Image (tube, rainbow, N blue to C red; front, side, top):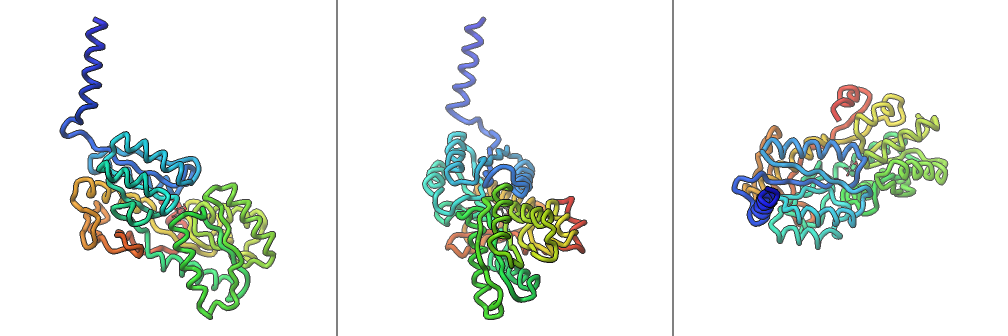
Length: 334
Ligand code: RAM
């Protein structure tokens, strides 16, 4: 009896290993930058909805710390699990290339969302909004808040984050306009998308630059941490905060005047679009080339276009401005 059971188990295991049964449910993974980031959780929620809507199985992963090394280890595991596609928000544009090329050679399709890898390491990128616009509007907001002059600082995520670095490049280009002659960018600090580090970096900025007028935080983790520091120190109306924030985390700081306004896009839709791209790539409905179109569930039809790094991308939409007039409507959505 025991022998027969183990033979059966052996046969079943062997059967699974040699060939995936026809019609097997495909697995689609998403790897965010790190755990403990509500923006990443919303993004992955949207990805999961898209995958399950299309009959796939979804695997969601994120390392404890936002490093390329940690993401490499996860990608190795997913290659072994023979997933159909990997979606990811990359912690480094180039460091993941060898492991992502290995995944691609194994037939796994790669779609980046939020933070891209270089063009050679992906099939397509899902871009939240035009990076030039994202960078420029934040400087324009700081200018208005500072009434044209004074010290400003940026509180970013990690120093390797592709998305934040592109936005900061555009901030610098905007600052080159003579209009901003009296607005001085004193420092770009890195809170690594960790709440504690973002808090201590904000405190250090306030200490080092006592005349600081505005902090721009192009990361939802950074802006929420800075919002709390400025609120606790009673600095509303003295040091202003703007950047990219989740309405659910920032409503309090918009209401109390610490952050007069900020921007973001819908992270759930961003993940959802990535999920549709992952399935379409795996089913070969699209190959990730320019001019293809993708029907992305409730988001409708989207175009694959050329990206500024020579690869391709699909754009979600335009950044949205949140202030006292609309924050209540959005704080329960994301
Ligand atoms: C943080 C992450 C993410 C970024 C948002 C705006 O949550 O760094 O990558 O897109 O902020």
